[in-house]
Image 1 (cartoon, rainbow, N blue to C red):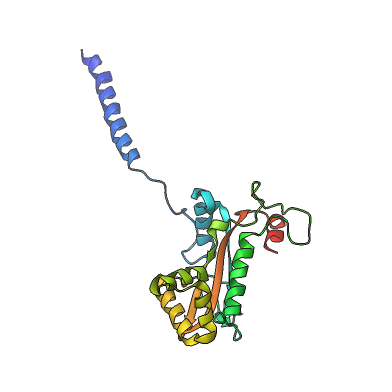
Image 2: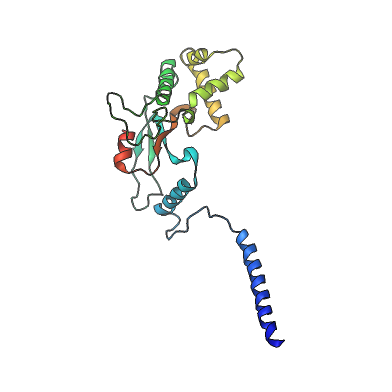
Length: 230
């Protein structure tokens, strides 16, 4: 009798332990950040998290995100410390000749958006297909539905506020009433929070950008991605 109690108690103990550990296991979740050996300000801290996000992402997140900016001439690196890359990166230098107000320049910007939507995997003047291009169906170097052409959104915004006005009439405002056009563009920028694509300094438009996803997968070797970017 006395010896039979021992295995029963051991069984009960293991059962309770199994239930307790099982309950705790169900509470576990996948970590969002990678435990690292680097300080919070170290460049590798964000670098590893970015790779983690790419691995956990799906769909279009697997493809390279590219931004073309108009109106930015460069970066003034005076004061940049190479051993503190996540600190001060420099001051932007704007192009003094930048103009997105005139109708001609608006049309040029829109033509770049359309060119990107139709950009094929075979560069102009060449016959060889880009190795990094993954679109085997349409043979496109970009994902057309993922192109952010901010002027198109502005025209829709303006048409919603002014009835029965055509896009060409909105574009013409840049020539006939540039002050009104700039004011409407700034109101759009502030109300729609499109600062990554459209920027103002002292109520003057300073840059405009196009963002799109290429059909190039992230983290490809240089020999594959460099011709793609070129």
